[in-house]
Amino acid sequence: MKLGDFSFRLWNSREKHYITNNLCLVEFNHNPGEIKVGLLFGEYGNYDFIENYDDEIEIELWTGYCDKNGKNIYEGDIVKTKSPYDCFLAKVSIHKEGTFYLESKSRDYIGSLIYLVKDEGYDTE
Image 1 (cartoon, one colour):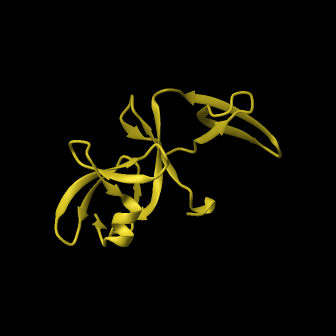
Image 2: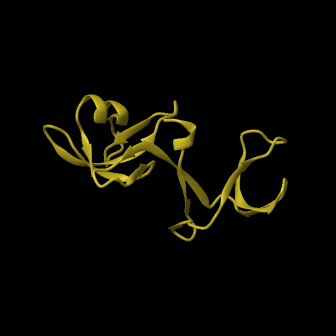
């Protein structure tokens, strides 16, 4: 996946909905690794950042894959997965090394998303 293909969505865990207005993610130089969610206002190089969310926002990354209808599959999605031999529901999760994988309802590791889709012929709905 190229940087231009990078996508994410924001889930407000307190209000239980996805945020659809124009929010941005910012990492400040004085605290590397800490990401803030808020609104960016301004033009011509003069911008003000207004932080309007804190711990209630969850960032869900796009896996780089789409389901059979062309809809993006994000981290945390529950997908209907069809293998050549079986059909089951699985949750898309992100491994500590940064790769996406499928896990069962009981949180058991099923396999790498890339491997299952590209090499094993699995399909996602």
